Image: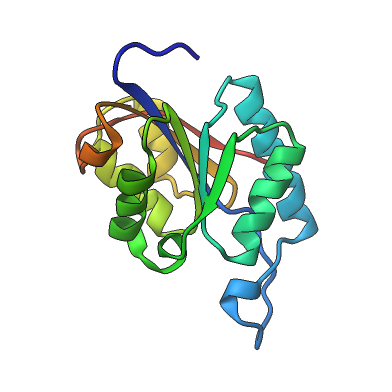
Length: 174
């Protein structure tokens, strides 16, 4: 992917399918076998489409960590991986703040998180701007292993609702 000036890409990646484990703390839920396959397929899709993030921001929950590990096994690359608790419990506003504070000079930032945060943030940042097909995909639900690719021009610290464009939406299945 080539960039001009302040062009940036934000990739919002919902974790893959996790186990339903009554009595187990939510943060400790692990991926199912299907979840591991789907996350690896997402990693392959990211690689095949040239979306290589310089920075990966990941929720510290077990299922999000495992999602990124499986995506990397599938071919996704990330130069640096940071974990931030606000991606687990901070909602869309917390996730937006993490991107603003952490994005730095990176041109491609990928966030591995949870729903409804990922879908709400994708929708709010783009407010209908961008690819019609991508918005239809987003509106149809943002299931596990879904990826939203968002274009943005400007410094990360200025990223705001309505300031970006939805370029792609993809649901990975392995």
